[in-house]
Length: 477
Image 1 (spheres, one colour):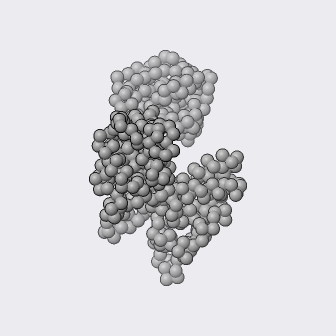
Image 2 (cartoon, rainbow, N blue to C red; image 1 turned 90 degrees about the vertical axis):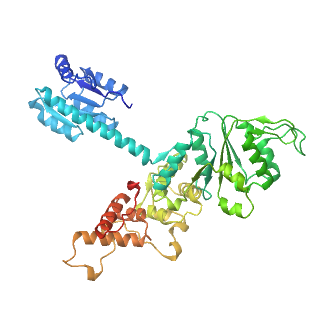
Image 3 (cartoon, rainbow, N blue to C red; image 1 turned 30 degrees about the vertical axis):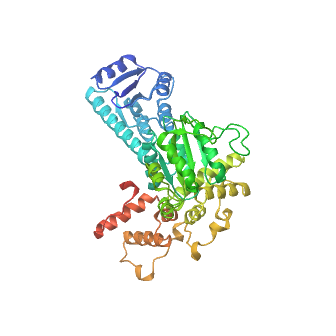
């Protein structure tokens, strides 16, 4: 927690030595605890991982290296300083290989211990800050979303900022981009999370019944109204009402929705009395609102009442290599549901996933992976198992699938020879691969078996040398 003093755990089976080390560090800037056995140390780690562990590897009950290995295996945020005698210097070297921060030979001087602990605490602080930075700005998962592209990081930040408020949210995006998932994430992160989350799909309900579905009706209000009905707005009292595909709502009902947003009261169809309701509105459409307003199909005053916090969900084709992350997740999930042992895709299959346009976005990807799981078996999905639409060349042009260094594009004759430096060969290979991928750096990274950030850094360095404006990358934002 911010402002809390870091904890240092000293593990030594000689109580007097442990107390001496504690006295060396007792300047009030940290909390010092002592354990005299390996079991005590393990219990402490399980309850409260310290910032720094001062570990004597020669313990009577548990090998000190086993404690170190457990810390690294469990990825505990603890820096380990090994203390050892001259007779066990080889053990100390092995501890460094296992991930220890440093080791100190006995007997320990106060100054040497303080300096080493101070350095370890600084490493711990920096690691915590970096981990927090990655969690906040480069998340692979967010609520039920999967993806680490820059476009989705922007969505995550808006959702996280908007969720605690009561402001109306207007979500736009193509069909299948996850608009309902976005609305659900806002609800889950809001103070209303324990109240109802009610969904109304305005495109799936007949227009003459939509008013009743949203606002409810009383018995006998119209033919077929055999009982009173609350309606979605009253059902969502205290929670969130999600109006999906709101662009399908007819103009007369838009007027009633506007009045509801203004006075927050509901009058059921056929009812004389109005009821107050506390509900947050999230709405979504796959249409361009401004086009709909210009065409006279959507009320401008309603749009500006709803359009308080806009969130635009990017199509899957604009989410860099998120398609591969989502596909891997779905493959394992659907495989487990069907009792199969899929664990990933071949490089060729992943390249085809990246090359495809995905007009149906995530919904289409879900159906594709479900079909693959049902019709195939094994651990790795090969390119041949993908649907024909993914294996056919996009727009009649094929994209080479390189999977090894031997398969990389060859340098033309005029560019070969002793005058070519290694950097020039690397640059040609990268640029030609990006060109073959129609400018997509994430696709080129898959083909070259490197991370996209590696390619971005090289391109930035070349642009800097040429005096061009540096390419903006996720890391730069």
